[in-house]
Amino acid sequence: AQRVTQPEKLLSVFKGAPVELKCNYSYSGSPELFWYVQYSRQRLQLLLRHISRESIKGFTADLNKGETSFHLKKPFAQEEDSAMYYCALSGGTNAGKSTFGDGTTLTVKP
Amino acid sequence: DTAVSQTPKYLVTQMGNDKSIKCEQNLGHDTMYWYKQDSKKFLKIMFSYNNKELIINETVPNRFSPKSPDKAHLNLHINSLELGDSAVYFCASSQVTGAQYFGPGTRLLVL
Image (tube, rainbow over all chains, first blue to last red):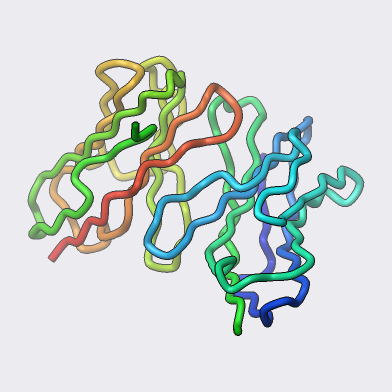
């Protein structure tokens, strides 16, 4: 069974501080991992996917297969980064199914 | 052009009523989904369709019935609405695997 764990429900940092949102997964094959962001009262938007290895809005995430983690990082948080972040895994025998973590609410204080 | 659209955006109704939410995507994706986001922001998959065929049906009361007239549309009909159905319902689409593109959500409030 595939599972995604985001251990922090709430995370609060000051503007300019580094931020790391943790994501751990369990999956028996080769997963696709994603981070989605949801700003207040808006739709979920794709932020990052591990296969593209890109940086979006200053965020990066590296897939660590040994630790089964896909943590989201940003060296200098901005107030506009305050949002809900979901880690998600896609793959497996259930084609078309993604498993989402419970989400982490990030608050960046001025 | 809106990639994934849902109507209505807001839905306020009485317990026991029947309501429908419509979803359309113009991305040419094969797979569409319905999610429920509760008051604690937990996102739970309800259904997934691939090329108009149901492929995932999570543990959802049978009062909820999805319908896909074609691969660009996935509608959700809810019978006998209950207070606990109040939530935000998101439609999404993707290729069979890969990143999902979400609609704006439908805020359902059952009184």
